[in-house]
Length: 144
Image (cartoon, rainbow, N blue to C red):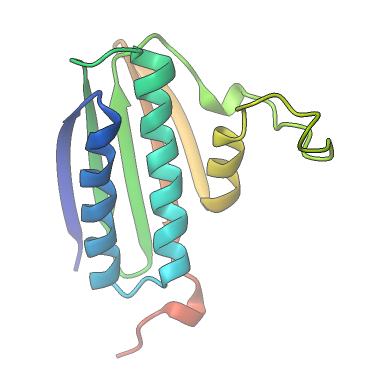
């Protein structure tokens, strides 16, 4: 069984909750652990917020979110038409610096990479396409 949903959301941060709520429902249905769900929600929220704040920088634009959830894998595809930006090209921050010595920001992409099992990016026909995947750990697999 597979659960799919496709959402077109406006470029307002308040819209992100719609996506994370749908994601939570679908992942619960397929038996993902709370940690796996929260990790995926964090990554998706961060990715979409980055598009809204840094990509578009204004309301009135559209972000497409497509999700496929199976018993062993949750995949979320985020598509936008903001200026081309490959988040995977961003270097990991120096997390060894003290909190007072760090510049504000710069941890979002780092967090996405840390909490997701697979992250890929491509640019096609004027669109940024970011695909995030979370694999269900064997301890949370539902056995029938």
